[in-house]
Image (cartoon, rainbow, N blue to C red; front, side):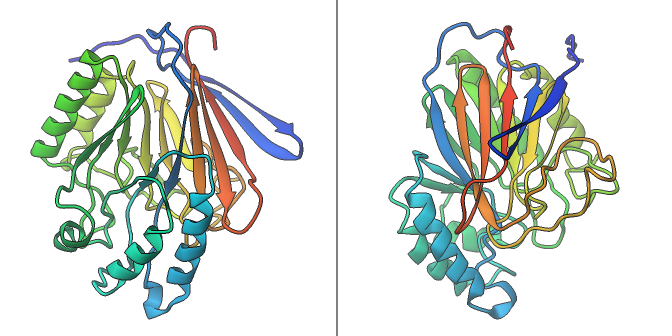
Length: 301
């Protein structure tokens, strides 16, 4: 059993220029003293090209891709549900708009993306390591077409642990990307996650062991804007906003654990990592940036 001493994260919310700004202080990167260069990238998810058999999702994805290309982000992470309902004919349409993004784009599959089609149109490997500066991003497909829940096999768990070991050896910090959340959310949330028996306990052990290395665990799937928690070792487990549609489920009004800022327009997120700070900037497509969330970490936070 792994043992560690937790510190209780604090939270405060302020307003800056009419923009909601939430500051979270988790336990993360406490062993890092050297300065690390700023890293900025884009997270987009749940494009659902072909949604309801209509062209509207493809048109919105084209507009979103054009905007993403103009951001400061140096690369893009797509967290799954690339197309809707496993529609094979939609992958070439997705890829045509993807060409508008003149920077690397790295996808994982979602529960709407059959693995064989993902391998045929997107990438042969369903799991991927993306090295960017001082960060190592581990992309794992934990979704299945027949379920809204997530699944991590023994092979995937072993792969994650080995890649985390390598990151520690190389003095890199870690971002894990999976479509379905691993956090055990409950009502009033959707309660879709990697449940016990499907890798939940074992994944939690990986978070426990590498809590000093893992900056964030990123997901799509929820369509609830930015929805997240940091109650496991201070690691930020975040479901990012859908590029197609989001719903306001009133989670903060219902005192649901975690955070869910009041912004639910279709869009993407610009993420900036710098020494002891992570900024999430919600960018609704076709509009100005809205909500920002600052996640601070480190011994002087």
